[in-house]
Image (cartoon, rainbow over all chains, first blue to last red):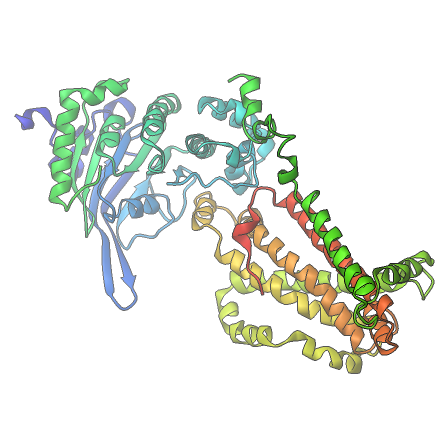
Length: 288
Length: 287
């Protein structure tokens, strides 16, 4: 019964030759994957305690334009994985390529949205959005128009000259999304960006993110520990087990787009959720 | 979103309270209660000297002190008997030492934090110097620099150096790691990381250090003058003390208090201007 509903991608995904068929959107966007990870591992050396394997032998592809979520409980290494894709952490074994190039440090093709907005309090919203442009030694004045457009897209057009402390938590995270998008990255790496928001704001932000994603045609790699959020947003969900972090299964979410909040109450959504919960429970407990 | 609703958010909304006039007294205690305290203290002083007849060398009458103050301040600033002249000398020594000491303290603080090897190797000496009472070197200043300004500037610089050093290092430690990750994820240069992330993040700590250093700078200048000087409020204090002229002595002490207050106020105004986004409370590291 379940087998008929779910697309069992795990086996398929592990086999490079058949990988393309694993993503329902792969053919619609691009033939070659944006990210290819092979045998990706991360081992931390803990002083006095030996070695700690955070991530073990990850194999996956992410295709251009896809929305892929990673779910797993705290400590499964999902944030480590994101930092490795951002070039902020070196990996200890295996390989990962972004846009055909082996990842060695931060790439201009990827931008990060962190768990907290990380807006600089001494800069206005506009100045915060232009910060990456300054870091990349480009001319901020030439990107001003684009910053205005992005701020309008995330609904902050009336707060351009405000300071972060004048904004609510949700608005601050919208500004952080605009700051990531101004770099025009192919890949948007999001590390539980709505984890600190209340439930209502979070749902609102999920809807906003879907709209922004469909308008900007970016590839999104989204970390969360909420099963519902992962299913609601994603084309595919990577479920991870804990210690060491491994991929338990990659599940394609076959729900029609555009999605609205009503989809959460459908049977199909419920079955995806039940399956993911069972997977994560087998891996050692789960938080909603 | 209309213009009106955006204007209502933030500070404007809070200031538009209808109970404004009623609570004005409580809202601005610095303009209401603080002057009242001053009046009460003056009344107590007057009570002790003029009513209870405390000896004048213990508590000089307020009017005598006031007379001395007026006499000292009514002379021209270039007159060596005027308080303006001596205040000018002391303030100049304090400001010069403050500028040199705090600039060096902040610079070294950044350097020691930015290069951990440097920081770790210098750490024991810094702790050693810091626990030393800096005024202990004041007598040495006369030997090294004589009775001129240099000795006072030097000791003030030594005293103001440490609050800035310690606060800068604390501020550097307290920079949110995510801010640094943000910069790194954008391929920011080392210089951009320092100038656009770390330095502004440290500003609340720097201002806490400057507030402490401002007060200490006056102490440094006065102590420097105590051990040997030809001008300055510290020298006046010594002269009046030896001559048992207690009323002008009190006048000079009041002047010193006023100067310290004004310097603290100046630092506070600069902080409001450049650090408006931070709450001072989370940046207090005292030395």
